Image (cartoon, rainbow, N blue to C red):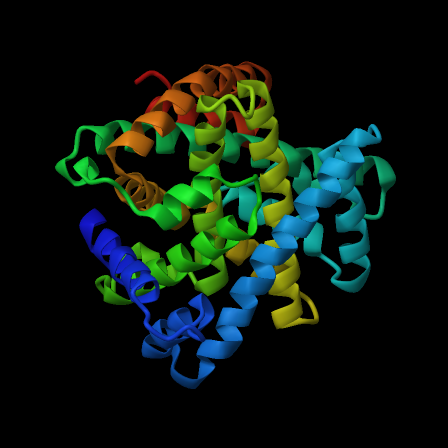
Length: 341
C-alpha cells in the first residue's frame, strides 16, 4: 500500500523535473493528473486546494504576528469563530461535534450557549485542546513511521532534490506549498486506486490536502530541529499554531462551498480528517515522504523527531491527567496506541 503512493509521487515528480518545455509549470502537470480523476472539474478542485493551502499560510502568519504582540493562537481562533458564527450559525458546535467524533455521546459542550461570551470561551478552549492533542498524536505517528522507513530498503536511495530543497527552505515557503500540492494530487490518485470500500474514499480533495499539510509539517519541523533552526519547544508551538491555522482554513473553504446552515456538514468534514481516515492517510503520507527523502535526509528527520517526541509525550500525559469525559478518553486512546512504544 505504502509503495503505491510512493510510486505515484515519484512519477509525478519525474514528469515535472524531466519536462523539456520551459513553459510547463507544476500546475500544468498536476492539472493533467487531476483530470484523470475529476475530468472537467479538475481546475475548480485544484483552485480549492490552492486556496486552502494559501489561506492556511496566511492564517499562520497572522497568528505568529499576533503572538509577537502578546495574543495567543486561541485568542485568534476565538475571533475567527465569532465572525464565522454570524454568517454561518451553528458553525462552532459543528466544529466541536466533528472533533469529538460520532461516538461523543452526551458531553458538556452540548449544553453550552454559543451566544454566551463565557460559554463561547469554553467552546474555543475545547477546540484548541483538541487541536493540540491531534498535533501531538500526529508527531508520534510520524515518528513511528520514520523509524520504520529508516530501516527500509526504499530509503537507501539519495532522495529527490525537490523534496530536499523544500525541507531546507524557510518555514511555510513557496517550496513547501508546491511540495504539498504535489503530495496532495499524488494522494488523490492513490485514493482513486484504493478499493471501493476503503475508508480513504471518505476524504475529498481539500480534506486530503489537510492531512498532507499536517504530515508534511511534522516532518519539516523535525528537519528544522535537527539542523538547529528551531528548538524542540519552538517546533511544538509551530505545530499547534499550524493546526489552528489549518482548521480555520478547512472550515472557511467548506463554508464557502456549502453556504447556508453548515454546522452538521462542517462536523462531517472535520470528523473525516481527525478520524480514522485522516489518521490512516497521514501515516501513509508520512511513510512516502520519508522514503522520498532518502537515507541521509531521513536520518536527519529521525534525529529531529527524537528531540520533539519527549515534549509531545509530556503534553499528552498532562492532558490525560487533567482532562475529563470525552477528551480524557480521546487522550487515553492516543496513549494506548503509541505513547508507551
